[in-house]
Length: 77
Image 1 (cartoon, rainbow, N blue to C red):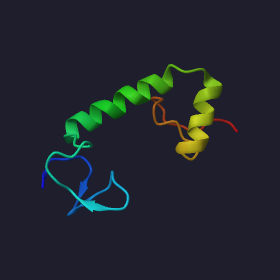
Image 2: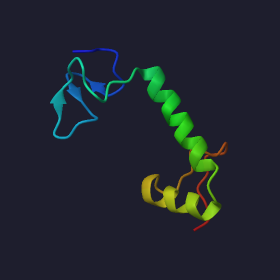
Image 3: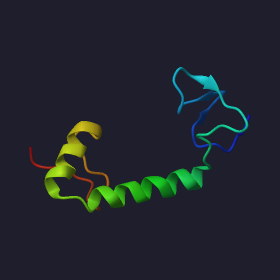
């Protein structure tokens, strides 16, 4: 079991469904640092999209919030 994986919560992996024990050699293994860098890159890519597409993503996945924006505010619906 790798204790440094970003997806490890106790003895379970939150990246897999159904929940399974974390194990060595997992294809989803990332350190917390690499996961943080990946989220930062993904948010930068979303921020580069047209405003309408950003609104769609915010509504579908973030409850109307736009965490990739500096103010993180909700958009006008």
